[in-house]
Length: 313
Image 1 (cartoon, helix red, strand yellow):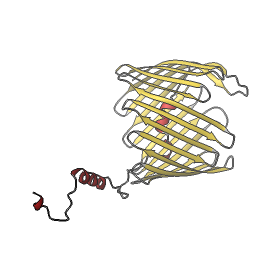
Image 2 (image 1 turned 180 degrees about the vertical axis):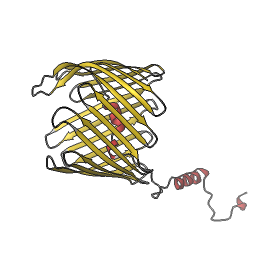
Image 3 (image 1 turned 90 degrees about the vertical axis):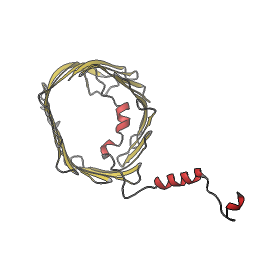
């Protein structure tokens, strides 16, 4: 059999040939990179675990769909409201309000409005002008002087990049751009200027994402440094951490949290370096019926918040 092999010929192992073929297939195509997420959603996975919408008191939400596109909502909230204070202790006053809402959701147009009994009016609009260009607007009108505000965003979605232009009241102007440089890495930058306070700033950001983890970092000339990391342990369990630092005032906060999705419920929680602990539970009792438990404990400020709610529709 040795005579059948010509002299000087070396056989290539099957495993080495397969590895070389796989490596060739994994070669990055820089002309076909994925489109990144919007700039304002750089830390969205971490925020889902570390920033649950905790509340204190009783909350009841009811949504009734009139047709496939239009629905009405009713919300009742009863609980204390915190007042701004210079002291370390938290000052609260008992409040209660009713909120009426109307929603119109279409593939290219979304209109959401909310009216509260205290006189506040909230409105949101999202309109897809083309497949690549969309307009977002949100506004809040109140009876209190200098507390109403509004903002309009123009978002353009390219093949492997996104850009955004922001215009708001108080002479607020901002622009951001995020670009995919590899299939997993995106780099971004932003600039903004506020004419009311005569302040301007520039920021840079990076985001790295795989099937198992997401890491993001952001730094701005205003002194803000934000880092976040999310590890996807399984399809139902995620662990998250973040680090916030403002080198202008020397404020540092770090937190760790979790997001656990069960068959009938979702549990999120976190604890930060200030000793504040929070947990948020959403339990599905039946189709269209959810029960909510919320808790937040801050021993340092002696602030304890517990709430429960029911969502129908």
